[in-house]
Image (cartoon, rainbow, N blue to C red; front, side, top):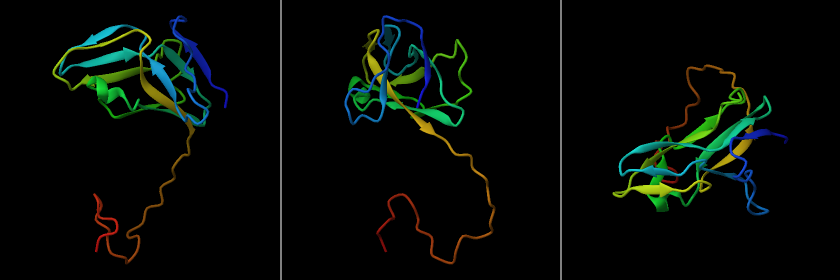
Amino acid sequence: MKVKIKRFDKTIALPAYKTAGAAALDLASREEISIAAGQIAYLPLNIALQVPADSFVLMVARSSLHKRGLMLINGVGIGDSDYCGDDDEYRAAVYNFSKETVLLKKGERVVQVIVLKRERVEWEEVDSFSKEKNRGGFGSTGKN
């Protein structure tokens, strides 16, 4: 899949797959930023993307982000195909849940993205699904 990409700071490398089996591409902070304990920071991620019209971007935290005392405040980010203007830089809303200030360096990888094909949903409203019993949810699978 071809995706157009614009870097705001060309001293930071293009996102790249780090292994042959990697599913996602890491994005790095464009700026050095200090995040105080209990605060939220909006990290500029140095890229604008133009993905195909039938695709979208899924942004999640790198698996190591929590080791720094940080998490994505919204859990998962979605980049729609029409979020593609020259100034539409991807950003990550990061929350510092630790008790200390965290310093992120310019070029430090914080999130990862996957570009996926999307399907449009057409609702088919029904009054009931079946006569089977409800499963319950929240850990109910396999329990009587």
